[in-house]
Length: 104
Image (cartoon, rainbow, N blue to C red; front, side):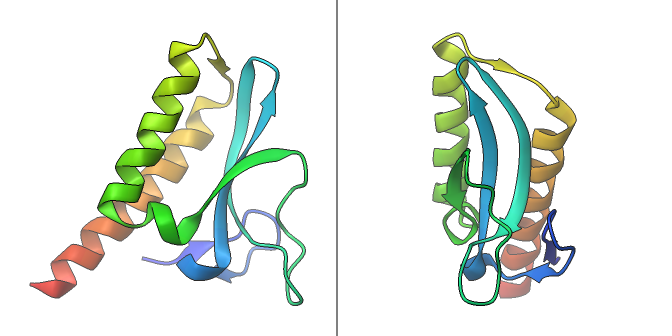
């Protein structure tokens, strides 16, 4: 399983990426996987919440990310573009599953 940057379309390794989203007051939208901004990439949007991709590709980090999302909704935030969040969660879940199966 490989990740691809939603901004530039190139492969994103877990250690060089982020899961980002736009936080507009009480609305969360546009979840995506992008490169972190560094000397090689300028893909990560500036006006978003984010979490490092390397963190969420581990089981405990993935669970923590889900807890963070739950906390947003418990505070009354609404979700737009639910399909984009589902796509990100599916990609990460598949990555974790493949990583675990390679160990066996």
